[in-house]
Image (cartoon, rainbow, N blue to C red; front, side):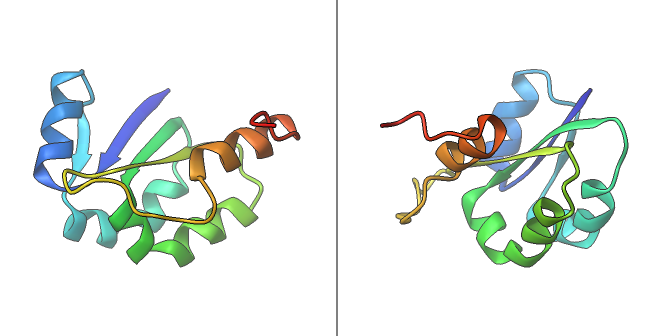
Length: 103
């Protein structure tokens, strides 16, 4: 399964050094997001939180489609995490196993 990263240059550089081959800057990622989310064989889509926040509708539509892949993971960018009521990683785990593991 393939990994794709969409984010600003520092995020892309870090994941490229870790071996991720497919990366997109935000403008290019936004133009291709729906196609990326519908790809077969794509295992994980890593997005910066700010990019995900700006494209929340497409991400929610993907999650509502009940497709198993790609798993969408949101990571902070160089400016740090966004304060939210719901932690996206905790929510991803809750949806995957059906229980809140933090309690």
